[in-house]
Length: 93
Length: 481
Image 1: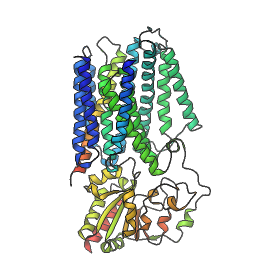
Image 2: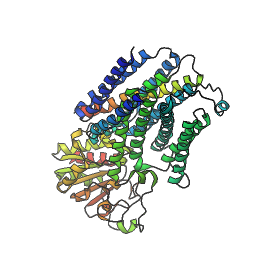
Image 3: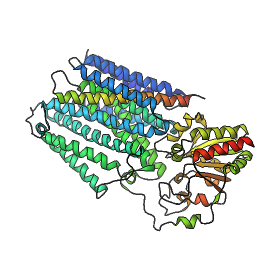
Image 4: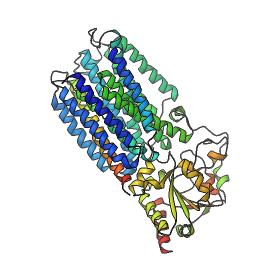
């Protein structure tokens, strides 16, 4: 229960921080912001690794772990690469 | 490795994500921000690899390999005009990943080992402590089932959004009863969540949550189309973040919670910006049709005999004598892939001493910031892309406005005609300029289905035809003058 309250506090504070940060992003960067946050949401890869199951897990768990790892990796790799591609276009003068 | 150390390193990853988003607040620091964010991801993933001991790595390695290749190919091959599709897919994958994690946790903790569908339909007896003691168990079960619910809605909703943007699905379908149909699906899914919390071993309840949520995602997005897509994509973006944060609660993982809530708020704020820019509530976008106007507005009456058309070379003559020109792009520019042609026209004007800027409406295109990315691709400097509030006061001092592929966001009815379905929506006041040039295929209405009185104004010139071709002809004519 103690841990849960701490996690909840973290969650709420992160929400407030998110509002403060995101409102400062200019409209011209809203598309890279979305693809960049897609990449950040690939953090589920960490969850996927933890949930991937062991050699003795049911097959179903292994397969779900495989799906989760695959999808999260697409988000991480695809999200960061495409964001970088876009931002490089904004940088040049 | 000790739990405290791991959590400290997750904290570092969280800080890097925050610094990464902070970098995105300025175009100059954005590339570095994206790099910091990616570094945070690397730190989080590597440290996690050290903590897992007896994982079957064949599945992990296979997943990383497949995902890495698919992600890289998508990112490097996607056209900038198709960015909304890419983001829609990534939203869906994010939801799908959280969904799979929650299901895997459920199966692991209940200790069931289903080998066929029928195994799933048998309720199992679950050890009382499988999900923890008392309140802890309730919270674990609520987190798991809500992650399944939101993850599944995000998954199918995003796939529908992708099909619509890619024009694989052209028609709109909805449940009978519209919002009520969706409401019943949602209530059913929530009832199944409550039932599962009380009967953790009832796999049927889990199957019901999953099935109802997958359907809900489909029917939530299927009736929505066209110009409302920016709202849907932003909202699904938010859902994918919330699902990730919830998955963090299941696993007690701090970095998932931090990253997930940042993504969740980002999506919500963008959703709100899009709704404000259309003067519509979120509920109205999701469930409502555009408010039906009291009387049907007769397009013929507005346009009849009043529309002046012009040829590109006539427009070129106008542009040559202009001092200030504003270009207003819309989704039509993306469709015609005309962004490079537009940049060349602007170059030609600037070489003749004309000041050129771009007026960008927040909902122009199919996702937030869509026009900015296209014009950045065509190497238009970002300081020339001016947002609505800053460009509007300048139209009175503007000689020529060129509207290319935009319609509803320039419709003066939104400002002047009380009772019109789009009344109150903030628009670009292009009609205040001395001359307005509209490049458009025909007089057909935009997404709102309304005629645009702008086209019939005395100082408006219609240039009919393909956007790219018309712009190239203008450039050629201008260079010859």
